[in-house]
Amino acid sequence: FPTQWKLTIDWAQYYTRLNMPERATELFLMACSQSRGQHGDPYRLHAEYEMSRGNYDKAQKILFRGAVALSQNAGAGFGNRNGMVELYYVWAVCEWHLENLSRSESVFDQALRVTPTGHEGAPARSLIYYAMAKL
Image (cartoon, rainbow, N blue to C red; front, side, top):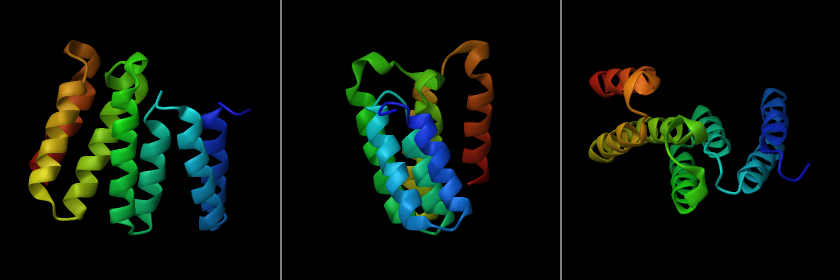
């Protein structure tokens, strides 16, 4: 299943529960590669795992690579369809943890730009505005 990144993510998360970080990281990287820039979830989930381990610098690099991969993939589109909003949201939180407050605000702004308009994007916009107010 070379293009089934969701299955690979499930395996990576299984290995995180087994406390096998090397294997989990290997599988997260494989899932990012399998997604071929079509979806942000593999990058976001990998970064969230690294953040849970206190590796914010590593998470920041993963999120940047994910954003680049998604933006270079013209067929992916924008918004929640490909996980871009969620990726930017996590990236902004990561920047806050790294005490890069202006960068965090900038990434939150980017998350708002790619959030769908109208009713479809309302929950994501609310979460982003709430997080900006709390941070």
